[in-house]
Image 1 (spheres, rainbow, N blue to C red):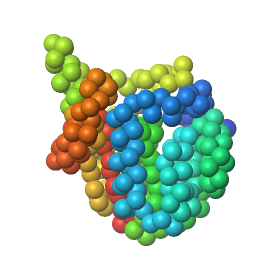
Image 2 (cartoon, rainbow, N blue to C red):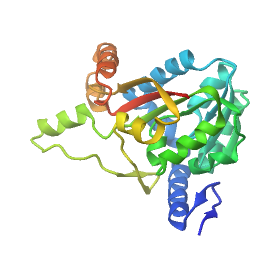
Image 3 (cartoon, rainbow, N blue to C red):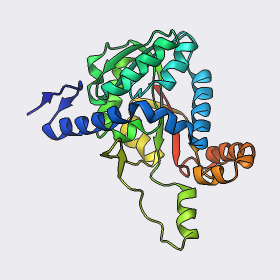
Length: 268
């Protein structure tokens, strides 16, 4: 039996329970979420890299869907550039924080409490681009279905830009070897706001082939945080201006080696 849940999702009781768990976790973490990211120099650098990517891939006056919007850092950046942004998220608490911050900045951003498996409730063909950053897509179970929904929502040649956690991370593996530990799979469970949520890690080329290739062309793929580990940068902050450009170059040469990857797609 399928049902709609109060967070705008559609699915089985198990899926509804997952939505509730994710929403509760991020509701609790909402106020502190961006502050925690800001304390991570690698996360702050990745955010800047994403904004550069958005600036070259998305027209200033575009209509954009941020479908794992969180507290809205990306949505607010795009709105400042002139985009019409719809920010959706399964977490009401995150969107309340987004609305508070957008109001302070005098930015108009439409918000929708909506799970990613219910994007078909939005108007078809209404968007020029869709984005998801900082592992939002790693909380989504049915990615082929997501790809279908995004293809329906986008105009011809519309763009999808995804910033996702990789199934392999070079610096993490090197750190394990340095401590004489055998490399192990990345943990699928993480604690956010006192709640455990499940993350699904992806190899970037396989993610594209399995979920998106039939509906989207691959425009660009690169890794971020290949050698730039947060703990290393924090220990040697003066090296950051050297490490980040090297990481950028290595990430383009080896797109499956980073903590995160960026997948830029265009609707066929």
